[in-house]
Length: 196
Ligand code: HEM
Image 1 (cartoon, helix red, strand yellow):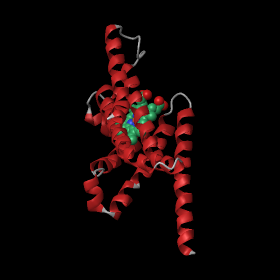
Image 2 (cartoon, rainbow, N blue to C red):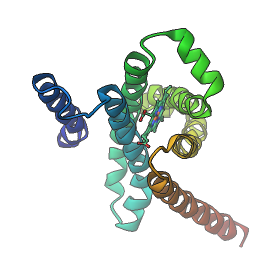
Image 3 (cartoon, rainbow, N blue to C red):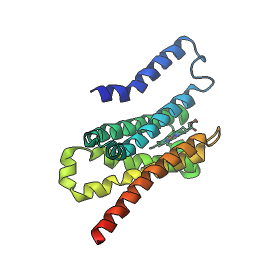
Image 4 (cartoon, rainbow, N blue to C red):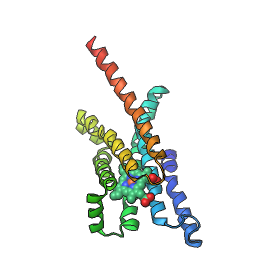
C-alpha cells in the first residue's frame, strides 16, 4: 500500500501543477504544457521500467529475496505511466487525430519504437498475476524476458527524440547495459557450473 502511494505520487504532483497552471497560465509548464506533461509521463515510465529491471539484481546484491514481490507493482506502474504518456501524446500532441498518429508511426522512428515498446508491455501487464504465472510456467519466464527488449526500445526512443542533448539517453542506456550485463554474467556462471 505504501509502495502504491509512492509510485502514484507523481500523479498527485502533476494534478497540483495542472491546478496551478490553470490558476496562473504559463507559469508552471512554460510555452507548451502538452509537451511538458507528455514528457513528464515518459520520464516516469522509463524510471519505473528501469526500477522494475533493477529489483531482482538489487534483491540478490542486498540478499533480500523478499524484494522480488515488489517487481510486479513497479512493472504495472511503468505500464500505467507509459499508457498515460501515450494518451497524453494522442490527446495533446496529435489532437486525437488517428490519421496523424498513423502518419507519425510511419514517418517518425521514435514514435514507431515507442508504440512497439508500449504494445509489448500489454501482454506483460496482462499476465503479471500469480494465476498467469502458474498457468504459463516456463513460458511465463520466456514471455517476461520481453521486458529487456522493451528496455532497449525505450532507450532507442530516447536517442531518437533527444532534443536537448543526449544526457538522459546515455544515462538510461548505461543503466540498461549494467542490468543486462549482470544478467548475462549470471547466466554464463550458471551454464559453466552445469557443465562441470
Ligand atoms: C515504454 C514506452 C515509452 C517510454 C518509456 C517513453 C519514454 C519517454 C521519455 C523519457 C521521454 C522524454 C524524453 C526527453 O525529455 O528528451 C519521451 C518523450 C516522448 N515520447 Fe515517449 N516513451 C514511450 C512510449 C511512447 C509512445 C507510445 C509514444 C507515442 C506514440 C511516445 C511519444 C513521445 C513523444 C512525442 C515525446 C516527446 C515529447 C516532447 O515533445 O517533448 N512515447 N518518452
